[in-house]
Amino acid sequence: MTGAGRQSSRLVQLRPAPFGADPVGARLDRIHRSPNYKDGAFVNPVGARTVPTGGLIKSLPENMRKEARLSRKPARPVPLHPTTLADIARPPASGLRLTWMGHSSVLAEIGGRRVLFDPVWGERCSPFSFAGPKRVHPTPVPLESLTGLDAVVISHDHYDHLDMPSILALVRSDVVFAVPLGVGAHLEHWGVPPERLRELDWNESTEIAGLTLTATPARHFCGRGLRGRQQTLWASWAVTDGTHRIFHSGDTGYFPGFAEIGAEHGPFDATMIQIGAYSEFWPDIHMTPEEGMRAHVDLSGGEPAGTMMPIHWGTFNLAQHPWAEPAEGTVAAAREAGAKIATPRPGAPFEPADPQPDDWWWREVAVRPAGGWPAQPQPVRVPATAAAPEAPAGGTGAAAAKSPAGGDSSADANAAADSDGSDGVGGDYEVARPT
Image 1 (cartoon, rainbow, N blue to C red):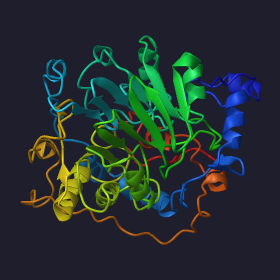
Image 2 (image 1 turned 90 degrees about the vertical axis):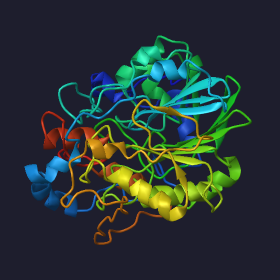
Image 3 (image 1 turned 135 degrees about the vertical axis):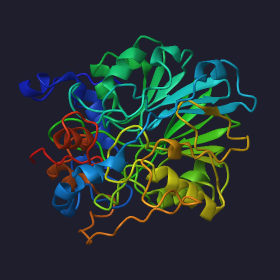
Image 4 (image 1 turned 120 degrees about the vertical axis):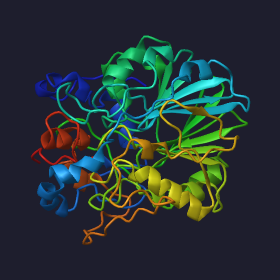
């Protein structure tokens, strides 16, 4: 699919390259025909508020105090696995191995093939090199050392999932990119040849190197520029080699569709589930650890099966919760559900078929809570906020277009909150940008 056609204005042509490009031409025609596109925007499978509740602004002064911010980043260097490249040089004994590279970036080795999900190797998840959320730990390995990639999978176009510097590095290989509908416009703008793009709507599949990759629904939103138009799709992904099956959630709020995804594409040997950067101020578009575990169980048919790995935490500070809380909450939720989880250090490969150790490594480097660490990790309790009007069933369109969420606000909100990008709040919302 190529996006041949002219951009709508001269101003768009002058915008910074990291903003990407709008879908045009044949690509835009295909978007307009999508069953998931209504009233000028992509919509969610169930209603979702993509505008943060008003309490977020009121909470900023208190939450930006130095004392409140200390726990949102590690107190000491994050321990990286030291032998990643040597470990992955040997084929996995079970035929399936996962390596968490930080945040939502995961290398999956499945059926002798290599799939890289949401590669973000940049120093900041931001359109700017001088501001925005800055990573709190180095990448475990150089991106160029991950040779033999067969597919790169992108969940959506927010800056902490679609990183232009990483894409530019990967263009130099011959890897094929699987992306949600509309996201291909950004990649073509950055030099990815159209023949190396597989651009999918929800529930569409493609074959790459003997693997079947399916874009599955998610409850989120999109955008990199200033206008907030929901013109690119967001997705979760199911991948199989015919023997092993894995699931990557991308960014999503909890919704009943996980059970349908599991019934159609499972059972999964492993799930990679977003459990970080949650907040009571945006409850519909990110999951808490408890919700992430509920999604894993739904994907498993109602009883926990396979191995769940928490993602979307530990690398960038995108919310107001303590840095280690998502991991602690996931361990507690897994214990409650009787589920098997893997909590590897960044860069540590593991095979889901193997027993997984109780490695609570984050406690070694996190700010110690008042009273010390409990003997067992405790559930996360996210305060409830006053109910906001729900979006229409399936909709984010008009609300998102009018909201300040025109790009991945985690970049701009955090940049406004802290000029060096080392701390901040906002998740996928923009606090400082005018509507």
